[in-house]
Length: 328
Ligand code: F6P
Image (cartoon, rainbow, N blue to C red; front, side, top):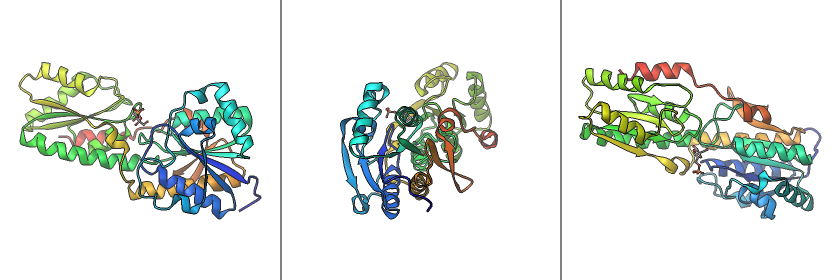
């Protein structure tokens, strides 16, 4: 490793939790220890930075957490950190504890806070993408996405059993405030008849056409996967409108909700988190700041945090076509 510029770092998890955040914390703490850096855990996101809710961390403080969902450091969406006063308190605590750099594990809201903090006070920051939504530019996958996808797919498989038994139509709503990655991929994996995502402007008539096609081909039950952020409406509204058009349909709605955020991380998420946690520490040691560690085409890459916040990963057009073709 090149010239060591820092001696002490802080690590926090912020925003919506995601499976694999613990594996990322473990990787940061152990990599820091390996390269001779002190590491402080900051509890409850930026709130902990403001309230000096710190805990000294070493290799043994992260034992037996690689397999755990949630985050042992807890998480928060801090309102106080959005204020200059809040960030000033946070900076004073960094000074008091000689914290020179922060590893922020979270999504775009968390990275926005990190960027502002770094610009205002010169604290080095490096982002690690942790969100189930997979909506962060600069990495092929975010930590937690793979686990959430599998949770959604398993849930939809179970819904399929009962949908088939009762000849029913199900609208299943999955998470994704602004992004359709979970919906598109879990929908393809579970054989949905239609998938509604915010990135694609579907009309209600397109959905009706899907139902008519399904009817013509003799399907007795159907599953429609709807992303939480879809612009056409939520699963209940879509179910209601569908019932008006097809009064004979027996329709049910299932909102998968926060079960998608929990559970033991998948192997892919644990490995991704380990690589990114390591990459965050080695990035800081190389003098990087205001960047996010990501994995693209199986390589560790660093993206300016500004790009990670503002740019968006495109939905794969092949997947959109495949979802349509295979729903025949
Ligand atoms: O960003 C992750 C996410 O799970 C979104 O998919 C969802 O819209 C949101 O968080 C829910 O947030 P909360 O846990 O605050 O209800």
